[in-house]
Structures are given as structure tokens and as C-alpha cells.
Length: 101
Picture 1 (cartoon, rainbow, N blue to C red):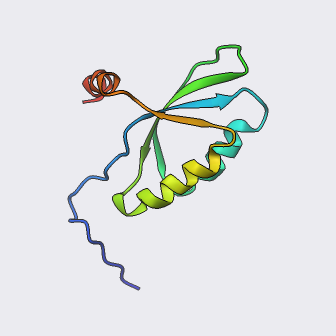
Picture 2: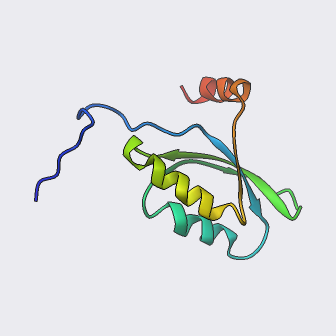
């Protein structure tokens, strides 16, 4: 079976903006998150720092093609009961891009 794409062949995947995700510090939280996102999309950045608090912040980058953005948003929404997603501010994003470009 042949599939076709509406994206030109040499176009790199478009990444949603990096997010800060607040993770609960409890057994199974990482597995819950990975089960929801990693079977479908690539995690390109996952910077975790244990704070010893009830929750910790993760800097998260995902590789999600534009055709999946709605589905990715739905997965984020389904995780919001346990995880908090915050897009980086414009200033923080500019600093971030300097380090990855």
C-alpha cells in the first residue's frame, strides 16, 4: 500500500513550542506520561530535575508533524488532570533556541 503526504519530502517536522511540564513526584507518573505520548511522537528534549517537592518541572520538546497537532493537543488535554503544561515565554524561547540552533 502506498501512502502520500501533503508535506514536501525534504521538509523537516515542525515542532510545537517547548513546554514546561509539571510532573507529580509519585510512582508511575513518568510511565503514564510516556504511555500517552511516546508511542506516537518523538520526544526530542526531556530535561528533568528532582526538586524533592510533590512535583518537579520538566523541559519538554516533542517532534509532532502539523497533521497531528490536533491529536497532540487532545493528548495534552487528557493528561491535564495530573500534569501541567506551560509554553515557554517568548523571552525564554529565544534563549532556548540559541542553545539548540
